[in-house]
Image (cartoon, rainbow, N blue to C red; front, side):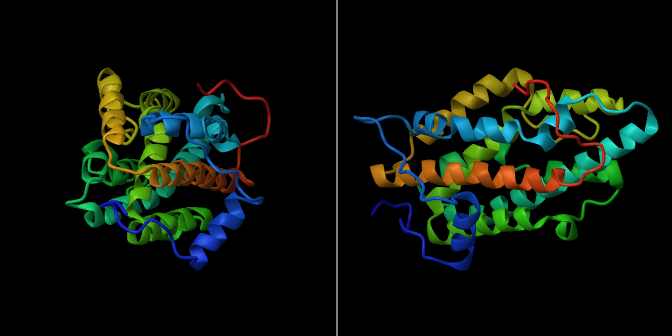
Length: 265
């Protein structure tokens, strides 16, 4: 057993429900290539398809890449969806940050305690800008609450799996942040930085350096082969859970229509 803590998760109600939602069939094992491979490479290769599916979800495509009806009504509807999106993210980042004290002083610290991953306060700032109220508890959908509970669960029973959730959030939020910040700035005719503190947390000029630093810290973790495989599988689950959240946000949402969308990449 490594210094990261308990390797196997108990079969809790949350674990069972998550598996039913994101793995309707028995999941295939995540193979590791012959010989040692960096964890960042294993994660990228093992989650590429699911990450792309999450990026191309109807809600994300509609919110950030579609042309909306002009005028105040179009801006109002889009703002409603953007605020709803931020509220879900606030719930997830709060759960993640609440879990961080559990890894203090462990070998996971270097990868999980990066300031670029602690973004709950920037989400609060953006929510306050748009609606003057950063409260989120009553606005988190069922899938978001399930996702947050999964983060809390792994933090207690297998903290090395927090790495998977940190990786998923980087891919979904941080690495694409500057493009999304610009879309929101243009859509609402905002001054630079207004309402987009979250997506602008890592400036575009610093993004490449942050990516290198984050991958380097992932690759420096002291995980054995089984733990690395579990991190990749958990990351796949994190992307699926994110897609479920987006599906729920899109369901019946005003102004969002299922149609071909502009490439999100």
